[in-house]
Image: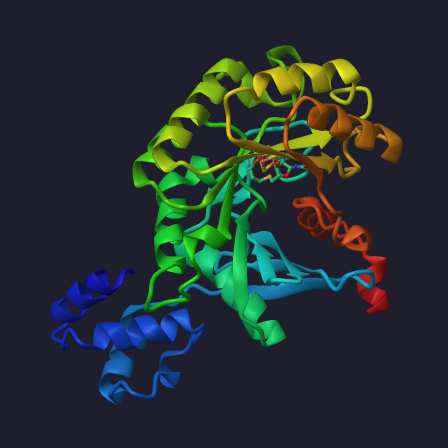
Length: 344
Ligand code: SAH
Ligand code: SF4
C-alpha cells in the first residue's frame, strides 16, 4: 500500500492516520513482523496481525559464484510458487535483478523462464520483497535494480508500475528511478502506456534480431508486432522521456551473428539515441542455441561501432552458477541436485 492507502485503511479500522507513515517506514526497511514495529501500540499490532499479512519471500536455494561473488536466489512465495533473483556486486554498488512473474507467457525459444508458460503475476510487494531479502541476507543496501529476471514486466503492467513508484518512494527504499532498468521483449502497447508515466528509468528492449524473419523464429511476440512498429514506439517513448534506450541483443551462433545482421541492425538504429548490449547467449539445457566464439562477438561489436552505433559486450557474471534466469527454478522443480550448492 502507498502511505495514503495505508492511512485510509487505518481510518477504516478506527486508528489515527499518522501511524501510516510509521508502518510504511517499517515495511520498507524490511521488517516483516508486526511485533517488531515497536513504536506502534500493542493493541494496534494485534489488530494488524489479525487483519493483514506482509508479503515476504523465503530463500529456498542460494548459489554463490566463486568467480565474482554473484549470488543467485531461488525464493518461495506465500503460495509455494518460486522465483529467481540475482545479486551482483559492481564498483558502484549492489544491483539486484528481480523477477516480475512466475514463469512467462512470451515463449522466447532461447529462454528458460518461459518454457512452461505463465503461472501467475507477482505483486509489487513480492518484487520489493526480493530486494529486501537480498539486503537482509547480506547486510547491505542495494543501489540499483534491473527488472530482468523471470517474466515480462509489461505483461504485468499495473504491478510493475506500482513497484517502480514504491521502490523509489522517499519514505521507502528510496532507490532513484535513474538507477532502475526495465527490460521488455517489446510489447508495443505496454511501451506506449509506460511513456505516459515519464519515469526516468532505463528502458531495455530485447531486440535480438535485425529483421522480422529472424525475430519471429526466436520470439513469438514478433508475430504480433513488427520491428518497425516496435522501433516506432521506441522513438515516441524517447521523444517523451528523452532517455537513451538500451537494446538487448543475445548473440546466438548461426542465428543472428552474421556480418549481414550487424549491417542490417545498424541501419535499423538510425535516428534513435540507443545503446546496444550484446549478450553472449547463455546455454540452456532445453534448447540448442550456442554463443558465438569471442572473435565473432568482437567482430559484431566492431562492425556496429564502425557504423556509429554504440555497442558493448555484456560482462558475464555468475558463469559458474547458471545465473541466467529460469534455470534454477527448473532444476528445483525437476528435483535435480546441484553440485555447486553441495560444495558450498
Ligand atoms: N521478459 C523481459 C525481461 C526478462 S528477460 C525481456 O525479455 O526483456 C531479460 C533478458 O534476458 C532479455 O533480454 C532476454 O531476452 C534475455 N535472455 C533470456 N534468455 C537468455 C539466454 N538464454 N541467453 C541470453 N539472454 C537471455
Ligand atoms: Fe519471457 Fe523475457 Fe524469457 Fe522472453 S526472454 S520468455 S519475454 S522472460
